[in-house]
Length: 176
Ligand code: SME
Image (cartoon, helix red, strand yellow):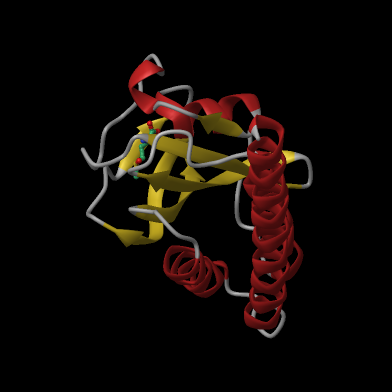
């Protein structure tokens, strides 16, 4: 009986993973359709924020920060008003920009220096955006759920960031 329950649970987990991947595959196609006809980085960041915010469950913020004179400056986003400037190395966003590594934070309250723009946020993923090998922006997504983002989220969100870089004109940025 215990084994049967466990097997059923396992089957459900597999189905959930499959559904999540299929949903993401569709989202990546929608992102490509949105971005492929436009090179303006503001327009593309605005539409990507809306696409992600309105199609991924359990989010309270999704948006971009662009690097300007060694600081991250708020770009297009969906959600509550947010802090405008983040120094490199500060918070989750500044850490993603300074290290060039994705920051996938299960509980933001355990992250030293986390900047709480929206008190509802409990977990967060920040993807660095690189042009010619240098970080020029980050894509930040927040959730009120703890441990909202897993490796599947990271994998497909990274694909969407790659599409943003592929289609947007990013020559005006001095990266780090
Ligand atoms: N939490 C981020 C700040 C940006 S907001 O979440 C929109 C951070 O720690 O860098």
